Image (cartoon, rainbow, N blue to C red; front, side):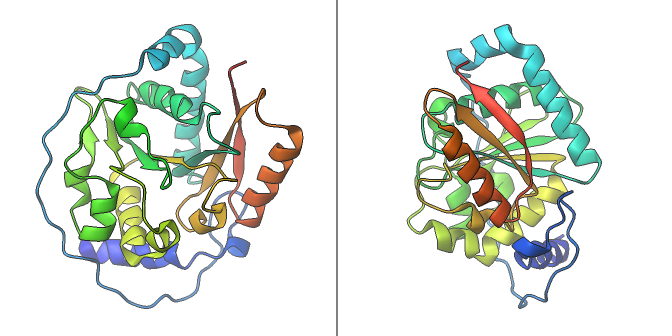
Length: 255
């Protein structure tokens, strides 16, 4: 399987923002230098009980049908080959992005697909804290220390949903995403899971979306109408478009 990871990693590492089809399918890519992924350390972290936030459970009860529709849409996108890895982002913090992604993950957990939720907010990770997890390993250990990805993701009991947390902020986010280990990881996740959701950081805080364009197929922009202006939304669309990341749609929170 290591050879497959290397080939897929070279494909996605070589993606050009200008060469991404709006359907999410690559038209072509350049040759990338050969690299050997770090040796994996197969030490499986023990399963931990996930404590779903009360807000998420409340949203599931009151608006479960909406999240079911969004889950079905993402499954259709994946099965059609248009979007297997989806980035959830916002213009700023405190717009309800992580809460929305967690509620969506609950809906996906009941579907006949294998889904993974990744904490990709390199400047302010929240998934582990929101779920009451104290992971032994996290995303940073996979990318920076060679820990096997399967040792870091946490499977939910009785469901086809897994969580890949981030234990703390990345010291150098741009270098983190530019590393061969990140590309290799994303290649493996594409092979292992039917759907990969990235809970990414805000577009206007810290790292630009351009640094993520090689990793994702499409994005959903989360907005809080009381916080985000139309001008910011238009700017966010421009940022995603310039990065070659198709926008699947927008999700309004606190409405």
